Image (cartoon, rainbow, N blue to C red; front, side):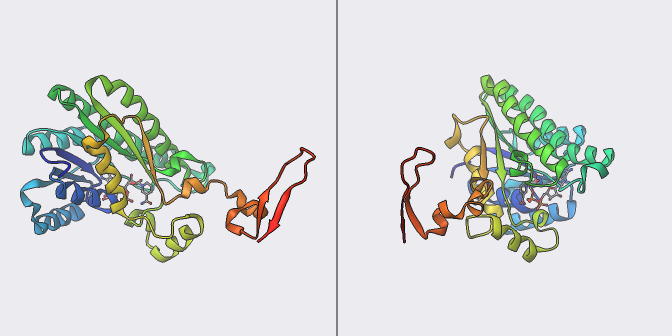
Length: 287
Ligand SMILES: NC(=O)c1ccc[n+]([C@@H]2O[C@H](COP(=O)([O-])OP(=O)(O)OC[C@H]3O[C@@H](n4cnc5c(N)ncnc54)[C@H](O)[C@@H]3O)[C@@H](O)[C@H]2O)c1
């Protein structure tokens, strides 16, 4: 088991990829604190984990990651219950503000940044203090998004907040490296969770199937696998990294093959070599 003896806190652990990660970490031998704003789903997650035989290794604490006192209490709870802190997965999130930039209120901007960016900042700040005192290193994992890597990957404020998470992780990784505390980021693409499907699972999946090269939908378990890598000693020399887990969505990029179908391997009607403006003849054969 890859997380034997380790204590992990997972925010947003009551649903979606946080819940999948909590279950995976438990299976891998960790003791896990599920922290979530939603105490109904939090208690349900606790029951499910207990039913799977992990009752002694799991705990739930209702937490608003945007409130500093809640984040402190969450981490103190982990140390109080399980004796130490090794892994913190700052994963809680909401879609936040939507709509045109010209119509976005400051209150909606603030709410979005409070949950997505300030929540991660607070998670890093307070877990690093505890890990530093323990003097045995640690792993902090943050959930950003492919929305933070481009201009059309999500709502405007959400994307800006996720970009902030990516840089925050790199900067914190540099600062905390001397203490052997790693800070890494996961950038999910479309993952079939309550957040992404927003009440229209079929519509959302059909939409993503058009853009995503990989034919299956992303699942919480795919993110749990990435989180496990960052949480475990397998990534001991990896810090400040961002791992895109998106079924090839970012790799597909601007889809210029749709603009220049003749040169695309996916439209394989021709093969050969083109020689640009050299004056030399192209060598093209029909397939
Ligand atoms: N699902 C996707 O396609 C996708 C893609 C990219 C990034 N993400 C990010 O992944 C993370 C997890 O999202 P998910 O898709 O599993 O969604 P989800 O809605 O299934 O889970 C998110 C959890 O976060 C909790 N939460 C929200 N605000 C909170 C707060 N202030 N304090 C504590 N908990 C809070 C929710 O109650 C929920 O349980 C989020 O940060 C999200 O932005 C999701």
